[in-house]
Amino acid sequence: MSALEGIKVIDAATLFAGPLMATVLGDFGAEVIKLEHPKKGDPVRDHGASKDGHGLWWKQMSRNKKSVSLNLSVEQGQEILIKLIQNADVFIENFRPGTLERWNLSPERLHEVNPGLIIMRTTGFGQFGPYSSRPGFGTLAEAMSGFAAITGEPDGPPTLPPFGLADGIAGLSGANAILIALLYREKNPGKGQVIDLALIEPIVTLMGAQPIIYDQLGTKQQRHGNRSVNNAPRNTYQTKDKKWLAVSTSAQTIAERVMHLVGHAEVIKEEWFAGGVTRAQHADQLDAYVGDWIAERNADDVIKAFEEAQAAVAPIYDVEDIFNDPQFQALDTITTVDDPDLGKIRMQNVMFRMSETPGAIKWAGRSRGTDNEDVFKEIGLSSNDLKSLEDEGVI
Image 1 (cartoon, rainbow, N blue to C red):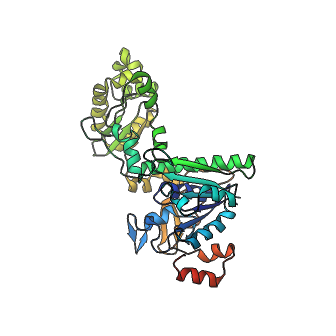
Image 2 (spheres, helix red, strand yellow; image 1 turned 30 degrees about the horizontal axis):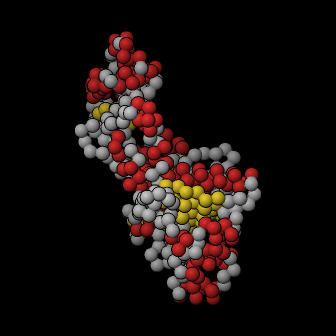
Image 3 (cartoon, helix red, strand yellow; image 1 turned 45 degrees about the horizontal axis):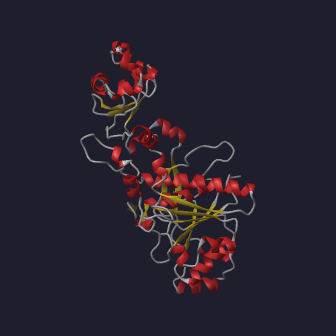
């Protein structure tokens, strides 16, 4: 039995945090009903690369979800959602604050219909405050969270990530919040709640001790490229065969092993070498020792030597390397899914292995409205009803 079997999730969110929450829940057995506008569809369908007219991001993000088309901006669509909500456990949305209320779908009304419903409201800036009405995207959260300010080279500009980092962090955080709410409801039967998740907040949490350091010491972390203010050597280094490797010495013992390996054990006796922060103050010297040694050797030889020395090193991978790496292959991190549109396709597997309730990918993202008949007939709509609603643009 899947861990979340019997949990019904209505996913009315788009781009990307809310849908990721639903994907995680669906991977572990929840029944996820994905709502899309009947004409426009979900914007993820047209986001990024496609093949033969099929959006590849959609195939991954909407896996394990039943696809239903429904126009929530019209009264008939709103009433259909109310019927779906009656037997749902979770409702995920990311409309601007006030939109659900304008559609007569406020949390208060939804809880009148289903008091145990967990309502996840995902926005850029939260449901209240001076920025709440602004459009919010992950890029803005990455900028405002402090992430961009500390990312990049010291003499370069602030740097944004090349993927949806803030959305991803918010999506995983939101899935956790939903599970917490489900556990609370289990202990308090019939007690749902509203979750207000702002994209700008989870990524701030991942900024670590920066806020308390600023509060107590008045100092701000600066951009240091690939270096760390907490330890050294910590950087990327190019090998003789022009490959890049990452080295980390977060532990004192690892730092000492690396210095022995690269032929500079004498530096271990220096008083400043005894702590990570003071080692970081001598990063130029330590980087030169490590970088020169690595530059004289091919990547395979460097990795072998580091492993024998029980020191930490890893190659800098692109996506092709991930596909070909034996460790990722052993874990089935990139797994194969059968798809009626594209045949066998490969995508990220579920994120972790559970001995009693493993997750699974049952199907990739489906065509718009694939499950209209099955889902809507469960709430009492007939074939004639569905035909009329389709003609009227409601579904």
